[in-house]
Length: 250
Image (cartoon, rainbow, N blue to C red; front, top):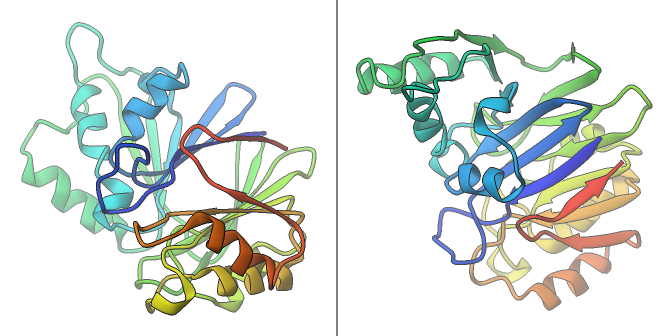
């Protein structure tokens, strides 16, 4: 299983960081987790044809996590090379209604022409998609927010927070994981409800006993050297500070 950070940024535009997006590759199956703005260009940088995305999981429906879905669907209608493989979208209960409203607001222009969209609601449960097991749990951000744990056929695992505050559900998702990818939006002295700061992310990772920790989703006030130091006060494992294009092989 290969994991690529497509976007390590936030809602604030950045020359160096796209908004939230993550690619999980297992064999020839390409799975996205979130599609913030910049995701499509990041896929091009990785040599991935946007028609080759098999499935998209959404952690929630804030714009910096979903915005590139609009050009993705619009581009999938492109003549003379429209998408032909069916697409599955997976998210929490309630996301389907939001998606329908989004599609309807553009009339026919986001609707498939040569393929079908299947929507799957996944709440607090584990399901199997090809060779990947995906466990989802409600995390502390907004009611639609879900974190995920992805486990491949060999048992390698990654936990993905999306946006969250400290919560036991995220600890459970990351329990003994090979890699945790946790948001770290602000420094500790600017902690915002519904988001993690470095010491809280470190505490969460320590309690989960994950092997490696990757922090991401940095708002501009974050000084990355200080973020690492603060996180390391709570978590003694290997800490990565996400950059767009960073990859992990599990």
